[in-house]
Figure 1 (spheres, rainbow, N blue to C red):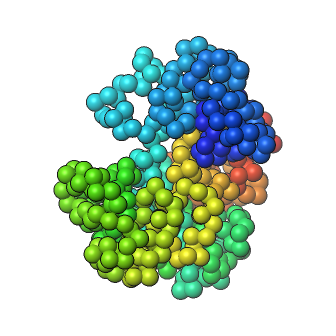
Figure 2 (tube, one colour):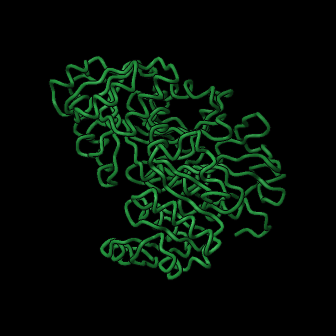
Length: 458
C-alpha cells in the first residue's frame, strides 16, 4: 500500500513507523527539515520537506499513485486542505484527517466533510477519542485499558495481576473448568518486558499485565475473579481544564453519571470560562502540584485523580502526590512514550497515550481485508482486531482445533447475530461472523490474509 503522511510529529512518526515495519510504501511530508531528517535516518520511508497541502509537494511525494493520505499536522486547516487537494487533483481513494477544533465537529455542520464538500473519509478528533477512553476507564477502575467491539457487546480490557489475585499459578485451561459459564478469555500476557499469547497450559504470575476478551455483562464478574473488585468511581478530581478535561467533565454531567467531578485549572481565565459552562463540577483555580489545592479538592477521599494537563511532568507528579495524600487511584495523560515506561514503578495505576489512541483509530482504515476495528496495545507490540469472516476464509467451516493458527494469534470471541460465542475447540466459525482476536504485531499481515477474499494464505 502506498501511503502519504502529512506531519512528522509524534503521531505522524508513530504511524510511519508502524506502516513501514509492515513493508508499506510510506512517504512523509513536513515543513520541518529537522523532523524529516530524523524520520529519514530512523525509518525506511521517504521524507519530503514542504507544505503538506501544496500540490507540488504532494506530487513529489507520489500522490498520483497513493492509496491513502493521512493528514496529522498541527493545523486542522492544513489537514483538511491536504485531503481536498489529494482528492481533487490526484484522486487519492482514502483521506484521513486529524481535526481538533470542536467547532468543525458540531452536529449542525455534520455535512461539512461529505464527498460534495470536503471529501474526507475519516475524521479523527484526539480530544474526543481520548476523552471517551478516560470515561471508559472511569467506568471500569480495575482495568488499565478498555475498548469495545462487536456493537459494544464484546469488551476487551487490560488488568494487572497483583499478589491477591485468586487465580495466580492456575493453568488457564483450569479456569474453564472452574468457571464453565464464564464468557471470558485471556488472550495476551506482558511479563518481564516480553509479550506472549498464552496457551491453555500457561499460568499467570504476580506482576503480569494481561488482556481479556469478555461478553459485556461478564466484565465485572471477570474482574472480580482476577481480584479486582473496584467499584465505579463516585468522586473524581480532574487536573487540567483543557479540551480533554472539559470534554470529560461535560460528558459526566450530560450522561447523568453517578461520578461527581472536581476540576483543578491553573489558568484563572480558563477556570472562569469552564465554570460558566459546567453546572455540577466544582472548579478550583490553582496548580495540581500544590499540596494545599489538592487538599482543598479533598484528594484524600477521592476515588481517582485524572491528570489531563498538556504537561506530562505535571500529570505524572500530580498523580504521585495525589496517591501519597490518600487518593485511591490515578490516571495520567502521557504524550511522550518514554514517560510511559516508568509510570507503573511510580504507582500510577493507568496512563493514556493520545498518540496510541490516534494510531489505533487510523489502523482500522489501513488494514486490508474485512477489518471492522483495531486497538493498539502495549505501545504497538500487539493489536486487538475485529474482522468479518468471509466464505473463502480458512477459518470458516471447520472446528477451531483443526485450524492451524500461527503463534501470536488468539481468538477471544466470535460475534454471530446478536450472540457472543466463547471459542472452544469444537467451535466452527461461519461466514459473516465477527471474530475478535489478539494479534502480535508481527502477525498482523497473516490476519489480513485470513480475512481477504483471496483463497491464498501464507
